[in-house]
Image 1 (cartoon, rainbow, N blue to C red):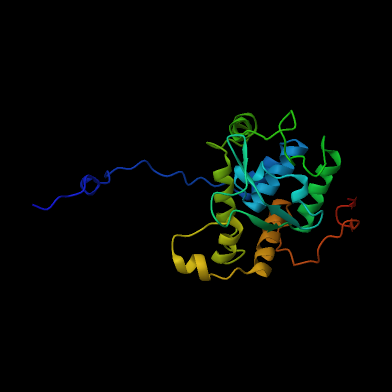
Image 2 (image 1 turned 60 degrees about the vertical axis):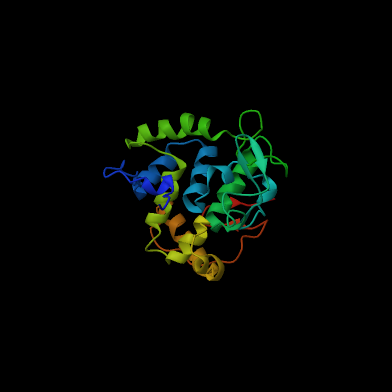
Length: 237
């Protein structure tokens, strides 16, 4: 008599709990940025354009930022512990920042409590690693109430970025930005990243967040001592 593995007898329920497909509108994202402190505005803007997971976001140190247009993700955090690896094999690496966002991050660097190389970019009140649950309860949950939306969390921000950017770049561009690893070997091993188009897509997202409303052209790297004429902000290291 053929023996059947117990797992093969399991059946998927007919009525599954519906998945959360909530996304924010451009207006809601702009309102969120307008209703937060300087630190949280930069953090949320970085997450809305960079689609960072909280484990990546809260592990960022100032040495991760080149004072130009690049953030280097070299470690992640889980339950307060720093790890030299990420959720997927594509989690670690460099991500591009539009020049306007680089200026915003430099502003925060000049005003934050500690901008030394080993200091966290977004620390907790004691200078240590931010707890994701605390940030969600203290910042994102009240923000959802202000926006009159069911909830606000990092997963929704990532989903929003992927949804709103779908007409600004290719699927490959968005996959590159989200740093997803697909199960399909071909996609994992042979899919070519398109850095130029990724930059254009991210620039368009940032343009919409700042209410310029037009796709942003590619520009040269922001030099350490450059001046952003549009913003009127002197950039220094």
